[in-house]
Image (cartoon, rainbow, N blue to C red; front, side):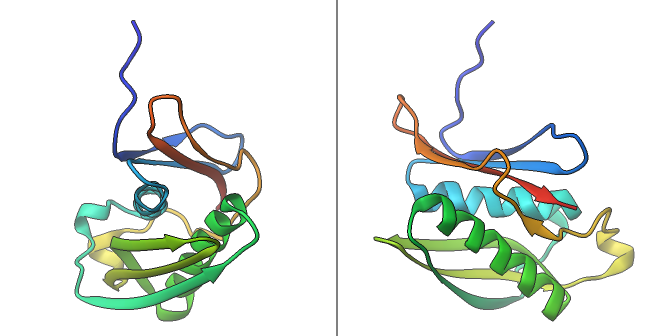
Length: 144
């Protein structure tokens, strides 16, 4: 039985030692937002992360795939430096530039019980494309 392709959402996909993240959306920006939620879900349940504080993220890259890895790596950097997790994202993409706001909170070890630390978004399984049904998909493997 064929399952319908989600119009917006995220999922994990199997990879040997790391974790694949995939986001779907009506726009490339929405797919990037959903993949960011999948990134948080590698670490903890995004529903447990309060959207108490916001940060701004900007990226500029030569193509959509590089922009996607830059976006996820910027979030991973912000998580590490600020000791935060994020659960809500607003992404705007124009040409090769991304401007985004990410909302989250400081990591609470007891409440969030982080399972792994995300080290970086890789080029493994990297794809950003609009599918035949018009839905955008953005995916890559996260080094954990």
